[in-house]
Every structure is written in C-alpha cells, then in structure tokens.
Image (tube, rainbow, N blue to C red; front, side, top):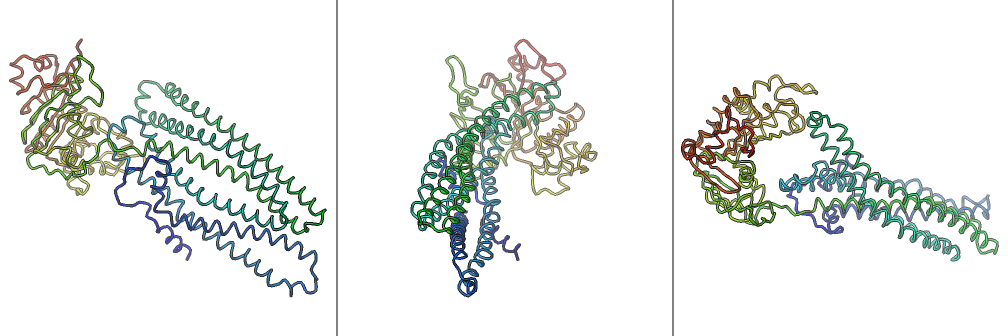
Length: 625
C-alpha cells in the first residue's frame, strides 16, 4: 500500500520531461521560478501541512499547561468523568493526528519534491548546456561546468523548500506561541519580543555576510573541481612530463583559495552561534524571571508557568536551527547566483526561428566572401583569420586544403560545421545558407574525422554506432572491417571483464592507442555515410601499412561525396581533384598536384620540404595543419 502511495506521489511531476529546454532567466527569483513552476502544487501542500503541524504542536504545549492546573485542583474521585473526553481527544491528537500529518508531509517532501525537484533541474540544465557552442566548453573546465549544474540544482531546490516550508513553519509556530503566551498574561510576551528583536538583528547582520562568503566558496569549489578533473583527464601528459608535483601545486593553489573562504565563513559562523547562545540564555532567564514575578503577584498559575517555560525551552532549541536554516538559505542563494552565470547564458550559436532541416541533394559547397576573426578586432596592417575568402566546391569534388600553420584551414572546416557564426559573408550547401538550417541536420549531413580523436567512455559498439544509432550488428562489424578495427577489437578486455565490442574504452578513449582510436573514429564515419566528408588528418595516427589499407576504403567511401581534406602528409591528398593553398586567411593557389608543382609557388615549396611525405622542421616553421 505504501509503495503504491509513494509511486503515485513520485509520478505527479515528471523529473525528466521530453520538451526542449529554454534559456533560463538571469534574475534570481525568475531563475528559481523557471525550475519551480511545475512543483508549486506540491510546495503549497507541504507548506499547509507544515503550518498545520506547527499549530498543533503549539496547541499541545498549551494543553500541557492546562493539564498542570487541572491536576493541581481536580477531584481525584471524579477526574476521569469530568476530563476523560478531553484527555482522549488530546491523546488522539498526539498519537494519530500529528503522526499522520507528519507522515503525509514527509511523503510529499521526500517522494514528491526532494528527489524529483533537483533531478528535473539537472536534466533541464544539462540539456540546455549540451547545446551550447564548442567555444563555450573550450573556455571553461568541463568539471567546473558539471559541478555548477549539480550544485545549482541542489541550491534551487533547497532554497525554495526552505523558504516555503521551514520559514512558514517558524512564522506560524512563533505567532501561535506569542498569542497563547499573551492569553496567559500579556507581560509574558515582553521577553519573547526582546529576544525576537535581538534575533532579527543578529540575522540582519550575519546572514548577508554568510551569503556572500558562500557565493565565493561555491565558485572556488567549482574551480578546485575543475583543476582536479583537468589533471585527471590529462593524466598521460602529467606522467610523461613527470609533473605530478606541478599538478599538486596547481590543485593546492585552488584549495588554498577555497580554504581561505571556508575559514572566513567558519569565523562568521562561530560568532553567529555565540550570539545566538547569548540570546537564548537571555530568553530563558527573562521568561523564567517574568513568570516567577507574575506568580508572586498572583497573576499567573502554575500551569501557565509550565506552559511558558516549556515553550521557551522548545523555542530556544529551535532558535539555533532556525537561524542556520536561514543562513543556509542564503548559502543556497549564493550557490544559485554563482550557477546562473554559467547556466543562464544565451546559446552563442542558435538555430534561426525559421530554420528548416538541410537536405543535401548534390553536395555543392560555396564559401562566399567569408571573413572571420574569432570576434577580435583586426589590427592595422594585419588580416583576419579568414579574410573575404571565396571558394566553390562542386558536387562530388574532392578538395585538399594546404597551408602553413595558422593559414585558416581548420577554421574553414569549423565554420562549415557552424561551430562558430561567420562575421561577414555566408556559407552555402546546395544553394542554402547554413545559417538558415537546423544545426542537427547540418551535422548529420557532414561526416568528420579529425586528428584529435575523442571517444566516449562507453563500449566500442556504442562508439561506432554513434555514427548510426539504429545500425545492426552486421553493419557495425562491416564498418569495423573496412576501418581495419576488427583486428584489435576482438582482443579487447576492459577491467570489468567486458570483451570485444562490449569493452569500454575509458575517458576520451584512453584505453586505446592513438591508431586504435583513429580506426574506431573512421569506422564511425563509414557507418554514418554522410554526403559530405571533412577529413582533418584522418589517418595521421596510423602506421603506413594500416593507413594504406584504410585509404583504399576511404577512397571508396568518397565516391559520389563532396570531400574536404586536410593533411600534414601532402602525399595523402596529392590525388585529390583539386588542391587549395591557403596563406594568412586567403587562397593563394589552386590546381591539381601536378599543376601546382609546375607553377613553383607555395605548394611546390612545401612539397620540396617534405621527406618521405612529411614536412620537416624549418626556420620558417612551414607546417601544414
């Protein structure tokens, strides 16, 4: 029965909604409401239950005071006949009503809110950030971004729940206590009001300071996480350069910054706790002294004293909890404000409102007067990374890009993939401006293999199927054979004992060699079978024998497709239909391999500097990228 009730409450709000996420507002209240809106009925129910429980608890304290007076003056012989019904009602209140209300309240909070609320925020924030630009992730630590998603989800949930549940409970409890104490004697409220004034003053002084310290602490916590994850992610580099001590120092610096913020926060916490203890002592002394004086004057009964002092002790016990709940609320607010800076950013690269899917019929590509400089101004006498570049690639044409390092080749392919928006000009595929098509359809139409191959920390099968999620096992195996990946996949075993295609490759594919990662990436693109191919050093990590074998399959794959290829080894692209030579953001030469050699220009110079198909070191650092 309980499980059915719990399941019903848990299903009231979907924690993983399918609708596309929208940009969160940047204002604190609006940001919190953006994620809170679906939960307001449950929050209202939790608030009303908390208020009811608080009133019943205060009422029970009042009854205990009445009970003392009843016992002091009642006739033992007729006590049960006179007061039996009243005592039974109070017993039912204490044994049935209050536990039942507490059970319902806990079920609403834990089953309806505590789990679903934070998970829904994580889900929506993650989906929104996943669609941020490549530059967004290149400009921050991945671990830091992930930490902010996790922290902010908890911050929003806890801030909203504390505000709507705890504070309402406290307000109702205090007001109820104040009214009942005043009904015994109005002078009894004087110690409570004095204590309340000091309590508010302490909160007014300490809580905003704790909030600011918490915001700084949350940011530094994310920084430390980012630094630690950065070291772990690049552990081969750390080992190769024997820089464990250097990484220790890097992490230590961040931890020292964080520890400094923690120390400041803890000092403030100690002062706040000491102030509250002093106020609590003042409250107990004041209420006790006032009660004794009123009793001495004959204005207060023994039961009223028991009620007033008992309620005071209860409030004294609650007071420190209350102020820390409020302080924690401000800490949550600090965490949320820190998270807003990361989560509530507009997408740098967005689909146009009228964007429609791209359908590639022929595969013609045109770069038209394209200018791009990564948003930076161009100094006098210098050129942008790409400067009014125009290039036409015919349907099915295979074009190789050649040039010195920094010539703009990788930038050109990144713009084709719309990892960045161009600053001037436009890029067309089959006559359609890529700024007017959906990004998903654009990326689906282009297969890419880069030199820096990154694999997901999943199985080999999942990594290859990334190119075609609905591919059959036979299709996956065929792609693996064409990429000559089947040779090593069969022998793979991961630490969990998974073998072959089921073996996991580690973060970014670290459990595989560079050549193995490259072959998995090639198999993935072969399976994708997109009409446009971008090959950026696609075979650079392979030995010559394997490269030659794979090249044959790549050439077969290129049939009927438009291809843009970049390579260090000019021999790997010499057979392309056309070579485009770039220098300082512009095209300086075009033609076939033989035509360019005969011309004796930049390409001929680069070719002559090669040895065995590689570019050698030179004073001019003529590197092809």
